[in-house]
Image (cartoon, rainbow, N blue to C red; front, side, top):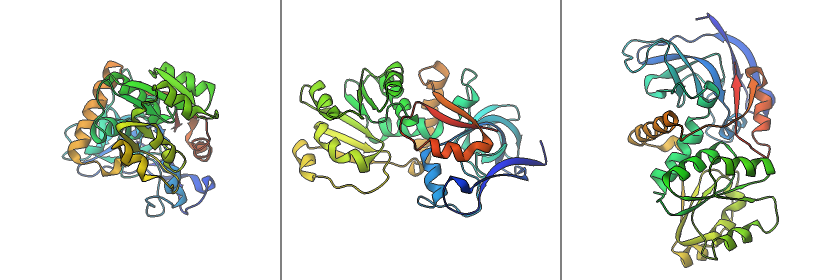
Amino acid sequence: MKATMKAIVVSDFGGPEVLRYVDMATPRPEAGQVLVRVHAAGVNPYDTYMRSGNYRPPTLPYTPGSDAAGVVEAVGSDVNRVAPGDRVYTATTLSGAYAEYALALESQVHPLPERVSFSQGAGVWVPYGTAFHALYQRTHARPGETVLIHGASGGVGIAAVQLARALGLTVWGTAGTARGLELAQHEGAHRVFNHAEPGYLDQILAASGGQGVDLILEMLANVNLGHDLKLLAARGRVIIIGSRGDVTIAPRELMAHHAAILALTLWNVTEAEQREIHAGLYAGLENGTLRPVVAKELPLADAARAHRDILTPGAAGKIVLVP
């Protein structure tokens, strides 16, 4: 273990330019803590919101990132579940994932199956944890239902497609590019719709025979939520996973269909839910049902570019940073 490491540090809230690539002391694990040598760090949209100071602003200065994959470098006392040399992914960290080493609690590191690469492992917690929580724990999706996944070519979207297909749902997805549509279909969507085309909502309703869909996973509620309500079947539900602003809806659309709007953030899951999520994700990763798709690997020093790219329309998988 090196005495110093490279890391990204944010000292002031602002645009991508505030992400500085610096040298800093390598943290050392104390009791109950694990030091992970990071092989890849996942970039999530919420990282950009935190960096700007608009969402759950952390105490400055800080190193961004919750999702990493690598090898356990060292452990503190009272750590029993993992040992140096183990392959792991992180589900949040103490010190931040955008670094050569990340410090985490023992409860924040989880085994990474051999068949899963480190870059794929960096795309496990937020995307797959969110999709699992949405489908299994919040909406109680049932086999035979039809689910519409907006942004089905993004990190959470791909995870939701794979999980919903494995659960026995009829899976429909939207994307805004030919590449995204092809990816969503390749990963398991039965039908895909181009949300950049006028009239795509009419296409979805027509495909349902005018009955609507049972479940909608919504990644951009401020744009789509009002339209989603017109696509719901009787007793359908929308789960809000992401939003970048306010929206006006017509409550009578909900009333007419006995429908419901649900919402989530991964940070509010209980310990029991977390255990269930990680057990489910490990099983899916181990047997190949869950296959994180990496769209782009960038050097850690290019974190600012990664933060610009992740908010650019046309997602086709996960962006990861490689120290």
